[in-house]
Length: 68
Image (cartoon, rainbow, N blue to C red; front, side, top):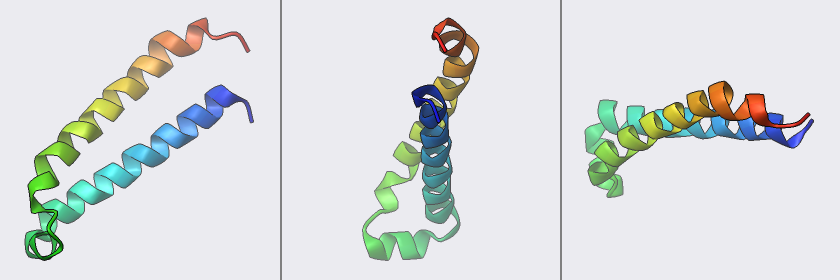
């Protein structure tokens, strides 16, 4: 597996983990508050959107200019 495809796999895994964390914060707020993570909900959502935007940019712009 080349480095560019590993980058895509790692990015997809990061998006899934962050989205799962945001979903946990959103649908189980009392558990998140007990764990001390309730304040991270907005940051997790913003990070998930930023990772999605970076992934789209990488696929559309950057991947076309990378040598195989």
